[in-house]
Image 1 (cartoon, rainbow over the protein chains, first blue to last red):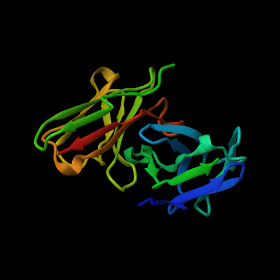
Image 2 (cartoon, chains in turn orange, brown):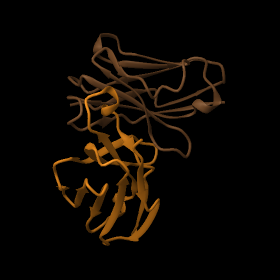
Image 3 (cartoon, rainbow over the protein chains, first blue to last red):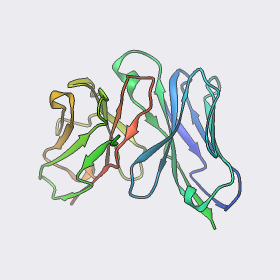
Image 4 (cartoon, chains in turn purple, orange):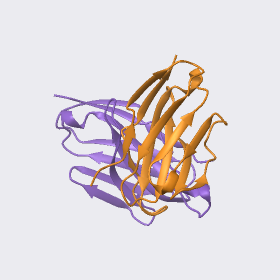
Length: 116
Length: 114
């Protein structure tokens, strides 16, 4: 059974700092990994999708890396801003063609606060 | 392009009552998923539709939950009768192709059973 762990559970940093959020998963047989952002009371916003054959994806100040063999992904946020404050979730989709291969398994998230 | 839309955004019902949640996926997305997050837990998968067919309902907690997707467009998730432990946030997501594309999520329906 796939398990996804996100460390730390909460993180507080001053504005302008670069930071790294960590995600680890127990079963390396994944199809892809997706990073999401959730603002309080809001839905999930997709940030980056990394296919299993990729090593990283970049979008603006965000860079996500994937080391499938070791079961790890990181989300790097450069020059953090107060508007980056949110909960960041990673989720993995397993390999395979059966029905269970299409669902995402989520971590519990990292709650990020960027202080002005 | 409109995103995934869920109705209502909040619902407060009494134990034993029935509630129906609705999800409108992104137009053209064949895959529709329901997930939920109960207090203090991770977001968990409930079920997956491809068009109007249920592909995987392994995450449905019990037979008080019934999901439908008539005509392969919008989907409803009915809870009948609701129990206290059903409280949480119910998310709907859609994707165009199975497996290899991004899942786009709605804003969620916060269900409170009192």
